[in-house]
Image (cartoon, rainbow, N blue to C red; front, top):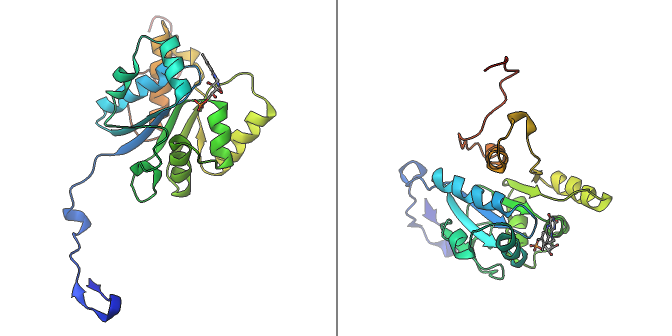
Length: 214
Ligand SMILES: Cc1cc2nc3c(=O)[nH]c(=O)nc-3n(C[C@H](O)[C@H](O)[C@H](O)COP(=O)(O)O)c2cc1C
């Protein structure tokens, strides 16, 4: 390849894609202030086990729900990720589409963050990163947790889906006959990561009716 700028014809070194070292798959994980912070934590643990490079952002209200709902500390959670950013850091690599990522998960996702992403309001790094993922036509999964749902929530979910996002409400799968909350969490995390073609291998999949005693 030649650099033709200003009439020059100096050769530019281009490493063929086949000889470049393959990079690890990268996923942005955002925890925001909806109930179910354990879902975000267990997502980070599953991605670590799958050797996925994680880029983590935690909102102020996620910190509050983590503290209220779990025994994890914020430093514990940050230690699960490869890279951690302040929600105010608009200079982070993930704020730009030129930084290649394989997708983003907001888990759990509040209706406030859903609304901001749908409106394209990029006033914090979570919404900016989500906006970038959508504009680059990459995968964005929003584990929206709220009930019941108003028409505002439903319209925001429809509109952001039309823009390319996937709404993944973490609804319990009673057909797995869960013996504890952990079973439901594993199932939700596993089904969410299925959307990225990642198999956690630690939840039961539906394989048709089981006969008695099986
Ligand atoms: C304990 C607790 C639980 C909450 N649960 C939810 C929830 O399940 N869904 C939701 O949309 N908002 C919930 N909220 C409200 C959000 O935290 C609030 O709207 C906040 O502004 C969200 O901001 P963020 O998305 O930037 O974290 C909860 C707040 C607290 C303190």
